[in-house]
Length: 347
Image (cartoon, rainbow, N blue to C red):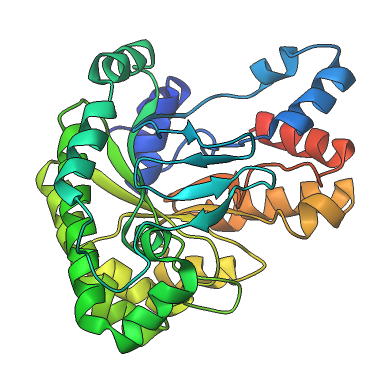
C-alpha cells in the first residue's frame, strides 16, 4: 500500500487519463476531472474578451472521442438525408426530422444489412488510431452514437414510435432487435481499438420523466441494453450512457444491467445531489451544472458557487466528472462563461 506521501506524489503526477481512471475507480484525485464543451458563438465571444484563443490553454482536456461519421447527402439547400434514410431540416438547430424511411409499422423493404455495411464502411479505423496515438494521455471513448430508442423514432417518427410501443408491440420489438444487432456490430468495431470506454447516446427522458414510461422502458429497452452493456464489458471496456431529461426512475435498472457512467445529469430535471447520495458509490456521474438556469440566467457568483458545490459534494469519494449538462450555448452571457472557465481551470 502506498504511504500518504507516496500517494500524494502519485497524484501530483496524474495525467488527464490517469486522473479520469482514478475518478472512475472511486479513488481520490489531485483535482476533480472535468469537461467543458463550448459552442462556437460563445467561443468567439471568449476570444474577443481574452484577445485570442489563449484562454483554451487554461483548461485541461481529459477526454477524446473516436466516432462513426454521419453521412449527409443534401437533397436541397435546407435539407439533407442521412445514412438511415431520414431527411432533416437544417434551418433550425438542432436539425429537425422531416421525413422517415418507415412510414408504416413494417420493416418490409428496409435493408438493415445494407445499412450495417454502409455504417461500418464509413468508420475510418486508421484515422481513429491516429487520434488515439496522439492522445495517449487522454481517456478515450469510442462513440457509437444514437442508440436503441433514438434510432427507433428516427426511423419511424417520434409519435409513431411511441404508438408502436403500445399498438404494434411485436413490430417495435423486431425494430429494436435489428437496431441492437447494428449497434453490436458498431461496438465490435470500436472495441477493436485501444479505447477505454464505449459511449452510447439515447435520450430516455424529457424534463418530466421517461418518454416511453418506466414500465415500457423496462420491457423494450432494458433487456436489449443489457445485451449491449454485456458485450462492451466482455471486450474489457466501460459503458457510458448519455441521456437528457429525468431518468431517475430507471437508474436502479440501469445499474442492475451494468451501466458504469451516466451523463449528462440535468439538474433542472433531477436532483443531482440526491442521485449522488443514493447511487454515487456504484454509479459514476458526469455533468450536473445547469445550462437552463444557472449558466444562462444566474449571476457570476451563482455560477461560481454552484461549480464549487458540485466539486465539494458530487466530487466527494470520486466517481464524478465536473461538466455542464449541455455545452455552453449562445444563451450563456460572456461573463458567466468566463466565470465557469476560471472556476474549472483553477482546479
